[in-house]
Amino acid sequence: MPTEEIAQPPPLGAPGLVTRPLASEIGVEILGVDLSRPLDDATFRAIESAWLDNCVLLARGQNLDEDAQVAFAARFGPLGQNVNKHNGGSKRHPATMLISNIRENGQLIGALPDGEMLFHSDQCYVETPCSAGMLYGIEIPSHGGETIFANMYRAWETLPGDLKRAVVGRKAVNIFEYSDAEGYGASAMDLFPAPPPGSKHYAHPIARAHPATGRKALYVNRGMTMCVEGMARAESDALLTRIFDHQEQARFQYAHAWRPGDLLVWDNRSALHARNDFPANERRMLRRVTVLGQRPC
Ligand code: SIN
Image (tube, rainbow, N blue to C red):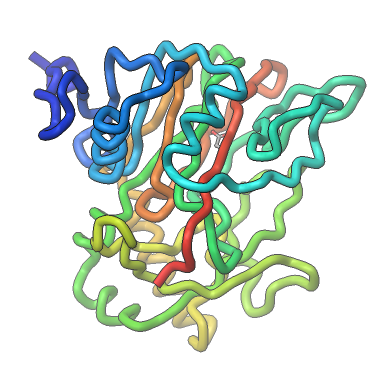
């Protein structure tokens, strides 16, 4: 029987929680849970523990309005407040953001509308990036638009020794300067040596310790990491290129093909994500909520 068909026994302390892996190195699906209803503490703790262990958690077939999604997200911690300039005129909860290419009266109703996105970690360009991101599928194109996740614990654990030694104690500068129209299709390394004026940027450790699990995870990415702090350009480019190539190996990944009603939560401290291209003439809409995090160390 293929591995993905085998339901795993409930984790300890989680009576009734049935899970199955999404890929060999990352991701777990929980089955038989209705997230629109309040969860008892034992069930939530089991879900949280499965999520921490696997970096990405999926529940399919959910029926979540905005309030229900926000309520479930709030179980993971205090929520981020989205400054959503694309509100399409609606009065959405301040924690939610639409990710969508849909335009109404010529105006985008959401952010991050079009095309491919390189691997990145949300908000890695600020001092305290979010700890978790949660996406709920509402409208999905006929093909493409998969969100791809990669396990940065495993990327760190398997990093060749010379690369590990080269980055110990070092920080990298992460930057955000992409407009919605341009997407995240360009490598941030191209911006070296200086962040463009007005861009948001912050230097974080290249390998961070996860505050809940204690495990180390690689914390650089091709989409937003511009350079290794205090390193000459050629050396920084060569080092980062090798790290990016290592961390983006298929063996660390799970590509999520969306269906309406999918609820996906990723640990933004231990997983990177990216997006495949999709037809520009088809509608795509996901609702996102983020959970506040701490300064990486
Ligand atoms: C994101 O990076 O938050 C968006 C992912 C997606 O649109 O699939």
